[in-house]
Image 1 (cartoon, helix red, strand yellow):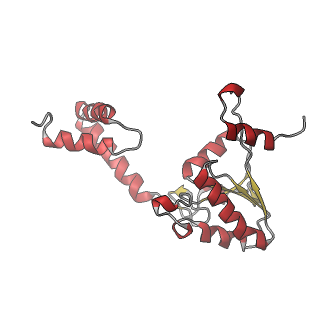
Image 2 (image 1 turned 180 degrees about the vertical axis):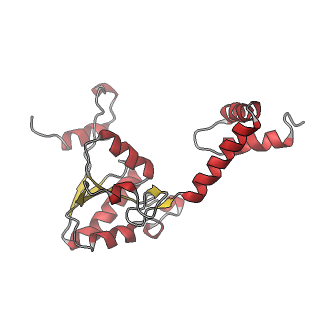
Image 3 (image 1 turned 60 degrees about the vertical axis):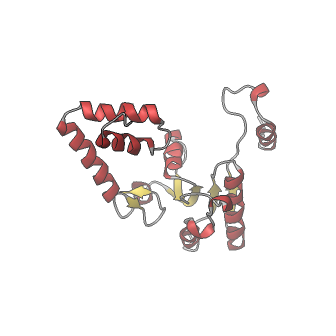
Length: 199
């Protein structure tokens, strides 16, 4: 027996396909849309379609943008000699929130993951190498996540860049601010020790 009419059931199913959305949240979102006005639903749908149609990759850094080049790559105040390599456009936002990094970015759009069938050719590595070969880049900061795939990707990219005479660094990681030692795992503690600096 179907609990919902077909159109509502389809709407719930579409919301449930979103990351981090379970069945109950999908139901709440569907009912929220249906309880709103026709204008609100049409506005939501048109914004969704417009974003999907207008957003694409920046031709330089591969970040999402609605122009040919993103605002970060266009900026005259950014340090063009440093590129921070990240996995995902959301990582760019995370670094920008620090308000302390003034270099450029390069978004790989994933990590090397043989288990998921993702190899180097599926990532934006060739585009990074083309940027480095332009001759203006002095340092690449590998800022992939500190998991197995992120580490493998960082090592793979660094091996490609080393022969080009480019300084390749890896972000430090370890204990979070406000964290307690007793709750940290062994790998995190080891990395915190290895990344220690003089005070």
